[in-house]
Every structure is written in C-alpha cells, then in structure tokens.
Image 1 (spheres, rainbow, N blue to C red):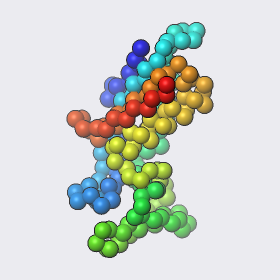
Image 2 (image 1 turned 60 degrees about the horizontal axis):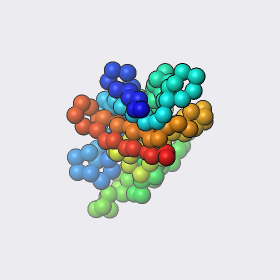
Image 3 (image 1 turned 45 degrees about the horizontal axis):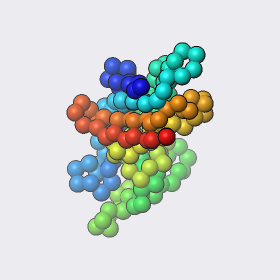
Image 4 (image 1 turned 30 degrees about the vertical axis):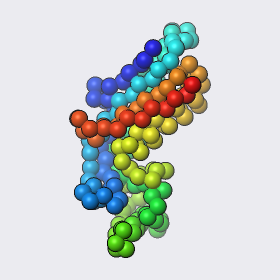
Length: 167
C-alpha cells in the first residue's frame, strides 16, 4: 500500500534562498517557493490499519518546512566553504575555482546551516527523507514501512526525488 501527500494541496511548503556554490547561474543568492511531496510504502497495521497516520506524517514534514521557511539555506559541509560565528552574525567564505574568495555576513537568525555538501533540490530531498525516517523511528512508527520517497520541488515542474528503502 502506498500513502501519498501532495505538497501543494497539503500545504507542505516553504520559501527559502540558497546558493549553489560554483554553479554559473545558481552560484548567486536566489530563492524558490518549494513544496514537498511524500510517499510511504508499507503494510497497513495497528489498531486503525494505517501505513502511517496522515496527520502524523504531515506534522513531521510541516515541522521541517517551518524550520527552513524564509531562511538562507547554507551547506555546512561544502568542501570550499568555511563559516564562523561572531556574536549575532555568521560569516561565510567560499573559495571559487579561480581562487577568488567570496565573503558573506548574515544575521544568525536568517541562516539555516544544513549538514549537507550542497543545497540543491537533490540534497534537500535526501535531507527531508532522512528527517522523516528519523522522526518515524523515534515514534516507533517505521516498522511496517518499506520505503520513503520525498520530492522537493523548486516550483511547479521541477524537483528532485529521493527514495530510501528501509526493507
């Protein structure tokens, strides 16, 4: 059985800016109105015969959308980017292939440092999928789930999908 949440209709959205460091056109600060689709496959179980309660799954996804909403998403683990914190500010330095150094300074509350090498839709979809799996595991709800698939859309018509097989 497959359970599905459509991000547009379920309100699983966030707006955020990011930088794809090193990319010709996406290597500048720009933003998207993201929406997140989620599918779970598994056997219905428990008292009500759910694969997973829709309400629980929506809450998990909305929680992460809220954390990312109206933030600059920064890949903490990018190989050519370093960051430091001073007071209420975060400083980023990115070394371009040419050797040129781009420096940024932002208020801490405007940034979300993600444990990723990049903030592409591909990497963000992996981040969402792992987040969902972790939350379901902590609630002891992942036992009957075979796979989790998350699509992070950067708008209508383009997105990245990641599937995590649990069994």
